[in-house]
Amino acid sequence: MRLALRSALWLLLCALAACREDELVVPTEYEPLPGERINPQADPQGLYVLNEGNMGSNKASIDFVDFRNAYYVRNLYAERNPSIVKELGDVGNDLQIYGSKLYAVVNCSHKVEVMDARSGRRLGQVDIPNCRYIRFHKGQAYVSSYVAPVQIDPDAPRGAVYRMDTTSLQVTGRVTVGYQPEEMAFAGDYLYVANSGGYRAPLYDRTLSVVEPEEMKQTAKIDVAPNLHRVRLDRRGQLWVSSRGDRSGTPSRLFVLQKEEGRNRYAVSDTVDVPCSDLALRGDSLYFISAAWDEQTETNAVRYGIIDIRTHQVLTDHFITDGTERDIAVPYGIALHPANGDIYVTDAKNYVSSGKLHCYSREGKLRWSVRTGDIPAHMVFLPK
Image (cartoon, rainbow, N blue to C red; front, side, top):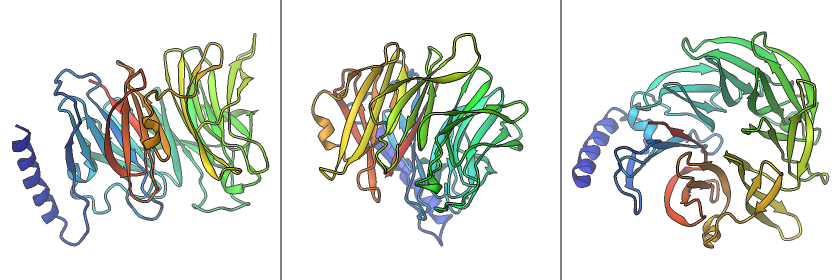
C-alpha cells in the first residue's frame, strides 16, 4: 500500500512541478516514521513543524508528522499550495492552531500566513511588519511586532501588538508596548508581553508589558531582567518568563511571576538559576532546553531539564536518559505530546542545512529521528 501511495504522490509532484516551470521548487517528500505503525484513531492526529530557514533565503517551510499514517511529510506547504510562487516566505517565527485554522508567523516576509489546519491549504494572509509571535483570546489573534525594519538600530522605536479578527482576517487594533516584543501569554483577561530590546543591544529592554485587550491599552510594565524572550502560563496560574541575559555578565535565567496577595497583578516571586532557550509544560512539569555559550570552553553548554512548577526545583538536567543527546548539535525547539508524554526535540544542526526532529519516550529513550527542513523550531499538535 505504501508503494502505491508513493507512486501516486510522485505523479502529483510532477504535475505540481509543471505548474512552476520558471522557479526552483523543493519537492514534498513522504518518509515512513521509523518503527511506527499506522493508527487511524491517533489523537492528536499529527504534529506540524515550522522550519525557520535562513534570513534572506526565502526557505521557511512546514513539515508534518502524520501519526495516523506513520509518515513524516517534508515541505507540506509547497504541495498543498502550488500556485503560491514564493511559497511560505522568509523566516518562520511561530506556528499555532486556533479553531480550524493554522497560523504561521513569517517574520521577514512581514505577514501571518493563515491555512486550513486539516489540509494545510492557504486561506489568506495578514500583513504585519516584522511580526514575531501569535496568541489568541475570545476570537481574536494578537501578534507581537518589532514594527521597525529588520536591522540592529540603537534608535529603533518601541514595538507593538496587533489585534486581528480570526474570521475576517482583518487588523482591528494596535497597542504600543516595549522594545522588540517577543512571546506573549494570556493570564485571565490580560495579555503579558515579553520585551527584548534586541535591536538596541546592549541597551536591552527588561520589562513585561501588561495589555488590556478590549481597549488595546498598555496598563503597566513589570521589571524582570534584560532581553526577555519566552513567557508561558502554567496550570497553577504562574507566569514563567525567560531572559536571554546580556554580554556584560547577566546570564540567561528563568523567572517565576505570581499574583501579589490581595492584588490582581503579577510580580517576580522567584528565580530559577538555569539558562533557557525553549520550554514546554505538561502537568506539574516544565521541560526546558538550553544551549548557552561558554566563553571559557568556547562550546555550547547544553541542558535538557525538568522543573517542578510547584517547588521551582530542578528535578533533572538530563531528561534524555539513553545518551543519544550526543547526536544533537544545537537543541532548538521542544514540544510534549499531550496524551502519551513523548518528548520532541528539534536540532538546528549548522543553521544552514537540514535539521532533525527527535522523538523520545517520556522515559527519555529515543524512539525515532527524521530529517527536517532548515532550522526546525516551532511545533504545534493537530487535534483529532
